[in-house]
Image 1 (cartoon, rainbow, N blue to C red):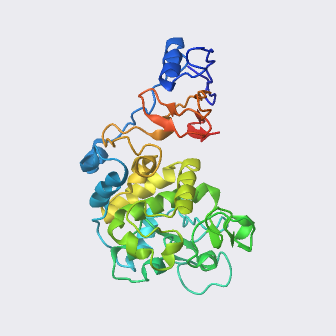
Image 2: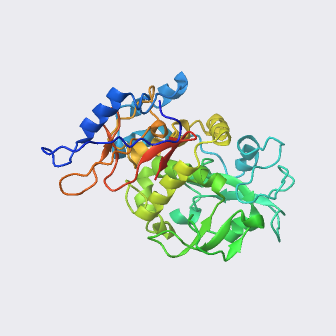
Image 3: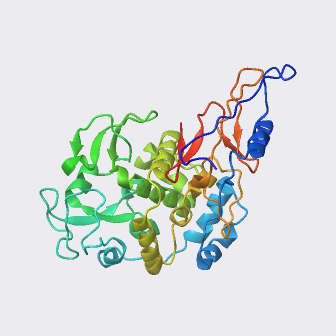
Length: 355
């Protein structure tokens, strides 16, 4: 087996008959015979039976159809009142030290209840209820379940929350505003495809927010197209699938990959499930977004024997076809895992890395 983090480039010998062209299948055959890659791709995750049962009706679906099947499962939930959220946060967003878990600021030590709402003049004064998916994007109506859906509502510092307003998430190329220690930032977008002002969360929470947005695109699939007609049109594409504009989707997929599911998210998922009685599938199945929008769209989802894309061991096959184009790379199960002209994919520290 290869050392973790290494990528194998098998030496492919010249062939006058093939004009130096070797098919991916042949390359993989040689790799197998040499036992250079003994790890099977997409190893099944260990899942608890209740989770597999909960998502069972989505088994066999892929791509857009998978997203719709998941929507039918997770969209029906117990709707909370807006006032309930203050109490709910004590279950969903409590740090190990008992303080409020604030994902917008790294200097706060809010006490539940005592520091909620009220007036604030500076960072660290008060926390409030943040719609991480801005409510103005659906017109601000409080009459829909999304208004109090805990999967996108978080307790955050009121001052930093105000700094964000309803800006879309993004990555800044320069900073015009920032929270203490540069934890959260506001500035012009550095992402190709959008040049407006964005709010960039801390790296450690980018994956959390990406999975939040994947949930919103799924649970509210039937409403998503209409939401793009408002301010949400900055990130939203005006359709049920893919739902996001290309720049936003590419960024969110990258965030989810760079910041994998954490214990914090798993614990919060369980807490929200206990309150709302629905779940975020993108937390339950790390990498599920790749089955809906990414490189595993042609792979059927299996709720009981889920195959996490992050376990894919890539093989960099330096094959050049007769036309000079890069050849695609396939996994050991015969599925293409790399588009042409992409660099190699490997596993490093338990994460999929693209060079």
